[in-house]
Length: 353
Image 1: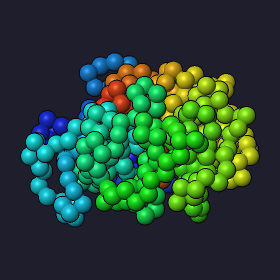
Image 2: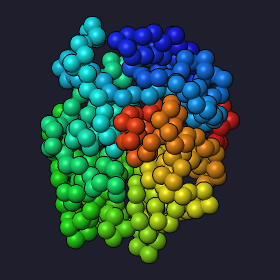
Image 3: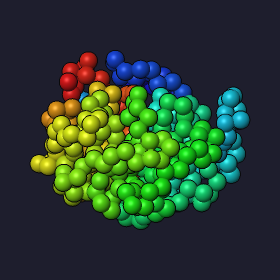
């Protein structure tokens, strides 16, 4: 990883990333980070936490890159050109990020403290509100994060467990569709639209079932009956739908017809909460039992273990949500009020084939 030495700017560290890991796409731009090490520390395989403490081991698969605690408040209208650094009053700090999703570097977060959907523009270090405060309700406390998915058109699926509905919000923050079915999905905690499909999969925590809807809200079928004990998170995978079952302490992979293809993780997971799947089908689980990210191959083989409880870089207070986009893994850490970004090594480097 090649980067410039961070310099102090308004009492914050700025890291200009000019490149990436070998085989990974370039990562241009500048992002505000807090207490992150110089790139040389990452190359050594460990991260030295600021203010002392034991180093956090790195892994060949996952390399901690950025720790972000906010951004300059902006809008799509003002994001066209990079201005001089805004005044400190324009800084928007994360309070309780509990949802994150990304597609083609379009990153959307939900902050339960701010009660806002926010789009993060990493190249300009901006947070662009996609909703007014309170327009998207807070998730049920201590149970589930806000389920999000960003689509290719820039719109976002939002699962609101407290409101008992699923929203599709366009890139400008306007609600395009509302899916509400109290009989089949009274407490939706996760939502996934598989690539190339118009079907929308909604995970309901009340009955531990996944209901498949059309985009117009018509229920088609249900998935997971007699198999799932609970639903904490869902993600799209190369083979179909990937579901995280917190009570069973395992990951289940369903094909598009709703058949179980495989299950794994029950010998490794303690209190799994968050889930992400990368382009190569590798699965990442955020575990509330030890605040570690546990990585598995597409076949369920254990690949890596990274993190641990704490607030030093590379550690987590509570992993509420994760998503994978290209060569990046985004981790919403609600207790530390920050977003962690990790670099994912490609299989071409011999990691997690």
